[in-house]
Every structure is written in structure tokens, then in C-alpha cells.
Image (cartoon, rainbow over all chains, first blue to last red):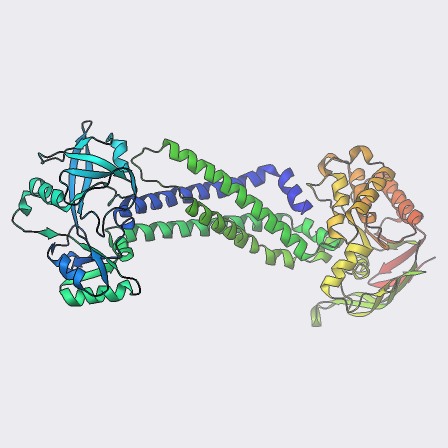
Length: 374
Length: 225
């Protein structure tokens, strides 16, 4: 241990370079992970923070809240299926609003207050009353656009402003800020903003429902599809992954992050291979005077641990500094859970990289220390 | 008391046509408090003999006993413990750990041998004093002269209080004056501690500081008064 620590202390330049290399990769990985988390959170809040266990879509809607079309009357059919505790309704209207001369994308989500599908994280203001018209709950992200409690939001193409009576957090839909209104308001806005939908009758886009205790969501979902025909029922988790791009984004980022970790292991492995080669003579001497392989390997592991912990710390600080200069529009989320997972992964990959030099160290013949061969 | 007993040791490297007989039926006895010079040209087998005695190489046949410990049949692990606790090595060149100070190059034995660290540290300070290195104890090897480095190496060999000191060409990298100084110091340290020591050398001028000289040629020991 004394040896391993003294080597780092007295060969600072070299250990700074390996720490820097690890820090750079960790920085990259943390920023990528924050982007991935940010995208995931910003895309899925509307469904993730819903109390629904499952959603019913039309089959031709292919699990898309925007494509799916179902008659509102079906809500009663869903509620009548054994195992369904309660059913709601969801409609999405992608619109724009103007605030401070800037157009903002807003997803107006119509729902039935008090029934499945409503946002669960109210942060301020009051809840919506059933059937209440032209009032809404705004996502916290709209605050950044200058919307405050009591303000009104006017959608492009609509004559009816919507008064913000409360805020909900983490309820975004596909990175758009959301405005939660009653189904009645949503229908009125839809016919103004999308006149082509007039005359289609009472159509909603999904029917979220909760199940009673003691039944599985999948079983009830199958029962719903069997009873209604021409519907596809998916659990809320499945619905989240079926949102356009969400699963693809997650797997792309996971792949990039995994490759980066392989790079961490390779960088550490190459570094130790190099210094082991360089120290061959010195290691032979140490083995000749009685150092066991275990002692030397423990030293290498300790050094790898120090390099990766220091590299992670530096990378972590750098990634947080970057967060300060990133524009608010970039969806980054630094989650403690992600940071911890990546910390453990960095340490493990560093140790794996170090293990590669073990065989080289074990093979050094202590007898080569004599006769000036070393 | 007999410190080292080498009995009929043969060491063959390789097999068949390429086999090289580095030691032929070598026998040697050394008492405590005896410093022996092993004199021979390069390739004579002197390093091989030193390696066999130091538990670095297993002989092809024959027996080596250090004190009451037979080296034959030891596992690699036992050989390592044996070297850490009972043998002090001084290598050709200087071979100090470059990023440890003079004192640390000695005290590092505290994590290698089984001796308590406090004991190693006390002995290191005493040796630094005896070897005239107290002022240089916090210097790194690159800041020390050749003679000083070899004195640190001697200190490292003695700091565990081993039974046996094995020295490989200690003057190879030193000029005559420094070489003589170092060997004289080595002889004093070995004698005052009552250790058994073997020094491999091809430098005839160094043998006057030893008790006895044994010549080695083509792997055979030729005893000499």
C-alpha cells in the first residue's frame, strides 16, 4: 500500500494524465446520461405521473395518443369490464401559444378530473372541478415561459383564453409543456384549433383505467380488448415506452454509455499494461526481495481505485459546471440515482481494466533480478 | 553454526540438445559470521548459485539448507516468505524503487516482510546512521550518488535482520574507490551482525575484505584458502 500510494504521490504527472482521461470519459458519460434522463423525463411525464394502470387505444392508433381515436361512449364499456376499478378519458391537442412574442409548443391534454389519467403531482393552486370550462393546470415548465398562477394562455387559432388555476410538476408530453384541462374544455378548443375535427362526435384518444385489488393489469387488459374488440390495451409502463422515440432514445443512449465504459476499462488496462512493462525490472526486484503477487496486485487495484474515484469526481464536477452554461431549452436532468450507478460502473470498469495487468505481473520471474538482467 | 549448506547441487537449464549445465555437483558450507567471495568470470554459474541459495531458483538436483530450513519442496509462496524474512539481497546496479526516498526504500520492507513495522523503522534509522545516510534519508534515488544508492541498497538488505546476505556484483556500477568503500562497509555490517554473507564478484581487489574466496568455473566450485 505504501508503495502504491508513494508512486501516485511522486509520479503526479502520470497519474494526473490517467485521472484526466477517466475524468473526460466520465464527464461525457454523465452529460449523455443527463441528456438521456432529461429526454426521458420530458417525454414521458404525462403518462409516468398518471395514476392509471393501463390505457386503451384503438388498434389503428398503434399505441399513439395522437393517432388513436375512440368514441367517448366506450368509457362506460371499459368501466363495465370485471376488474376495472375506474375509467377516465384522455385527449391530446398539440397547439402553440404566444408568450412574450415567442411561440411555445403546448400539449393541451383533456381529461376527466377525479378519474384515471389526471396528473398526480400538483405543486400549487387548486385542482380542476369536474366539467369546469376554460381553466387549466399548467406544467411547471410553463413558468419558465413566463406563465404565472392566474395568467391566461391563449392558443393560436382559439378565441377562448384558459386561466391557469394551478401548476403540476413533471407532466410533460414529448418535450412539450402541458396544459391540463377538462375534457369539455379540450373538445371546445379542439374544434377551434383543428376545425377539421368538427363533426367527428365525442371522440377521445385513449381510455385510461385503474384495476381493482387482486387482479393483474394484463388479465384485465385482455378482458377489455375481448369485450370491446378493435382496441389495444397496454399497461402504463408499456405506453410510456411506446411513446414515439422514447424507447429508441433510451437504447441509443444506453449503447453509447456502455461503449464509453468499455473505453474506461481499455484506457485503464492500457495504462497499467504500459507502466507494468516499464516497471518490469523494478517489479522483479520487489518480488526477489519477497513481495508476494497478492501484495503487488493489491497495489495495482488500489491505484486503479484512486484513479477512477478521482477521475469520476473531476468528471462529475465538470458535468455540473456544464449544466450552468447549457441553455434551459436543453433537456438535461442530473439524477442522483444515475450518478450513483455510473460511479459504481466506473469503479468496476477501472478494476476490470487493472485486472488485465495481473497476468503480466504474476509472470515476472523474481530470479531475473539477479545477474543484472532486470 | 552452519548457516548455509549446499550439497551436491546441479542446475540444468533447458532440455535435450539445448540443455545447459550451469552448476555441476556444487557443494559449499558457510558458518554464521562468515563473508564469502564467489569469484568467477561471466557465465561461470555464480549468479545461478546465488539464485539457488536465495530461494529464487530450484536446483535440478541436490539440497540447499539455510540454518535448519531445507529449501527443497518449498512452494512458491513459502519461497517468497523465506526471501522476505530470511534473506537480504543487494543487486547489481542499484535497483532502488525510484519513487521512494532513501528511508522509504528501507522501510518498505515493513509491508513485505513479517517483521513489525515499528521494528523495521527503528532499524532503518539505525542503519541510515551507520551507513552515513541520515542527512540523505529524505532524498529520492535520483538525488543520490552511486555510492549512496548502493549504501541504501545495503540498508534495505539488512533492515529485516535476515540470516543471510546475498550480494550480486555490488561494485559493477562504481569506480574503484567507491566500490572499495561500499564493500568494506558491507563487510563491517555483515560481521558486526554475525550474519553469513556471499558476494558474487569478478573483481579480485574486493576479495581482501572477505573471509574466504571460492572460485567458480563452468559451474564447478574450486575451493581456495
